[in-house]
Amino acid sequence: TTTTTTTTTTRLHSTVNTDTAEEIRIKRKQELLGLLGSATKQSNNKSIVDPVLADPISKLPLKVETMGAMLAGDTSPGVKVSFTTEDGTDVFMGRTNTFYNLLEPQQQQQTSSSPSKKSNPALSLDTLRVFIPPPLRSAMATAGVLQSDDYVPMRDLFTSPSVSFAYERGWRQGFAQAGFPGADEEYDMVRKYFEDVTKDVEGSTVVDMSCATGLFTRRLAKSNDYNRVIACDYSESMLQEARRRINSDPSLQTKSSTTKLDLVRCDVAKIPMRTSSIDALHAGAAMHCWPDLDAGLGEIYRVLKPGGRYFATTFLSTYFGSLQTAEGGQTGVNRQAFQYFESVDVLRSMLVKAGFENEKVSVEVLDPACVVIKCEK
Image 1 (cartoon, one colour):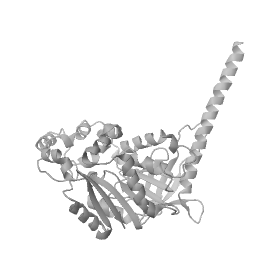
Image 2: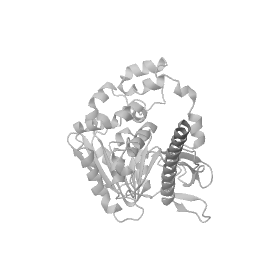
Image 3: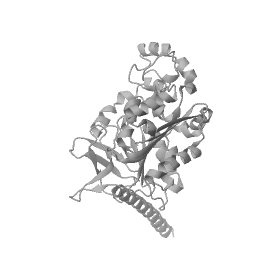
Image 4: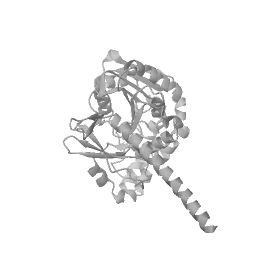
């Protein structure tokens, strides 16, 4: 009896494991088919080229290849993907179940992942740097407590896992004090503005720049209004939290979802996309966090198709009054907590400088300090 029971238990256990492995293989196959479905085949029928993604510097198209076979014993739920420039100069890596790292080539990623950075206690203090009065910052940097020049508050604050964790757990909701109407109403504004340039457009592609935890990414993808949604952020921890929330959203895991959704790590000042390849781009509560604002806006104008639309929200400087006071008037990306926009005219001039025509730029304020931007290329 003992032998029979053991054999039966073993068979049941084996069946469960086989079913799980089969489910994993099916999921990976679907991910791979989705990846292939968004790319264009080359004449040799052996390689595919992404119709949108490109090298962040050269802007050369990227050839997409999957790495490794889907073996029965491989329980990893995602497909490893490489992106190579057509001339073979640079290789970028990623996984379909996490994100594609197009911030820097693979060789540079390995070089920058030095053990010394992981063990440096100054890194944890640097995440609090924006809250330290400027005079103390200088003294602490001189003493070696803070790193001197490589920390950019408006960008690197959001690389902190604690900030990523808190973003949809109270942080974003706090924007209501500035006049932000709330995610659902904001998304409705975005959807209506994008409709004219995406409805019934074959291969329509929308970018959610500085997507953070995917608050709007998920809404864009769930609408099924677009063929492809690309969510971008500089912060690995934000992208990881975004992926976790995407995976836990049942409506994004069903077969009825027709939108391909990709997460990409990148710098808005060097967008890894081809020129004139995007139908619309959204940047919610983001522009004040971009260190090189002129370059970022210029890149957005570049990647939009003619007639493409840009929708953004940000803050007037009055919202950051206490921070500006604490900074003591110091300026520069290594000292300021955020970009400070003094007026609608300042923002409009930046957008025109980036290439948008003045008559195609709308900048309005929702009292007291929420700015809504709409531009058409």
